Length: 371
Image (cartoon, rainbow, N blue to C red):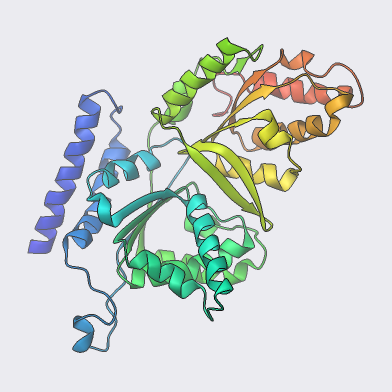
């Protein structure tokens, strides 16, 4: 065994030991697939332990050949399998000064802001200073829940990854999709295919086939619809949020949909939390709600009011949102003014709402999202 292999093996054992301690402490349930994935992070640890090599650095004085890209890891699999947890466990072992962990959508929002600022300065290639600002401060970027739903992101992300990894920034990312399914059926997808090839060539692609959807297991048998939407309901929703997120306050999830921003006020590891008026009081349409359903595995929607002709547009949006979540099998947790069948009892749209009420009832079943 080479010295490099021995070092990586020792680092993998340290990561496995960190996982085992979480199991022993009762924080995690033992899962062979999760434990078996820990050695995949060892090359990233080795990269961080080695002196940084930048293009044009000392090595470049003696060779015209660019250094190989930094290592990358792409973990994909079904929802609630522990992808984000493993990435967080890995990141927790690292010196934080040169590492950043961020949700993919939030990261891309920052990239767009940087591009806009560079263009305001009339920079010819706006991506270069944006990427270089990252490479100047980081050696590892951890991106949670990568998915491409916007043509603008699709055109940017390939060049961005190439420049970051080429400059020595290792990347680890999680996704619900295998690389070949990223931006599936998207506009001008042919232009996106080279990035998929880049992922396959430069990142270890691993499917996490964990035994259990732990997020759904936490909710199995739990109440997920609360009425009326009073102080008791708010307290119950807060307890569920803390259980699903580990007391993390979450941060805004900003989704780019056809050049517009759709915001879920609080999100953490695939769990979102919003008030009815945040999502249904805004001029959103089916595409926006599909993007939300794509980005989240659990949505906590609070303070759904009585619906009638007086808030007909908001009611229509609520119906569209429920349909999108239902079709995507997203777990919906609701606090509302009253029971589903009593939410909309008068005015235009009462008949159509019967299907929504039925779906709200169906979505309360303990095993609904896994069906």
